[in-house]
Length: 254
Image (spheres, rainbow, N blue to C red):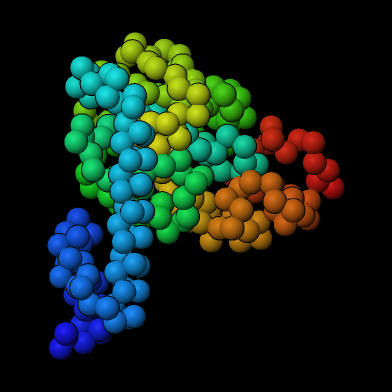
């Protein structure tokens, strides 16, 4: 072939992976080592894409099971365990034909991937609601009740009323909408996983903002969780206005 390997590489790079077979077929007869390696590389990329499509399809198991419902909403929270900052919940209604890949339990994703998916979910979701309960309220009613309150708040902030809730493990009190609690739901339901991403990114951004107000605690890095450095700062400086007093009462703050 007269075509240069660099040109073949550029052709492949410019091709949507959904159409990659057609382009690969053009070069399969080329026996040059560089071309063979390029084809092998993109065959692997294509296989990974197919695996991800299959994984995503599996994540829609509950959405398909309850397909008769018009607006299925996933619910999840983040921030039960930290020593500081709010507990944040999110409610997400995805379109039934949602084609976003790589949605997963937020803990399984890199920060970069979470940020990318946050934007896609916010752009394509039928509705997104967020609830945030501050530390003082957590201290007042306890973290479990604060979590429920954040979830109810998130549902109330949806612009579209859901007719089914898929929850990560819990049944939310004082909610009349049908609920389906799913153990480890953020790894089994695309709607719950999407909610976990929205909640995680939202809370992380809040803690990064708080870091600018209270830089001594390292909130941008630890997000309020009890890292060694955070606890040492807490012992040295005492609590900030966003620390949960009920979570730090066992620390000596002399």
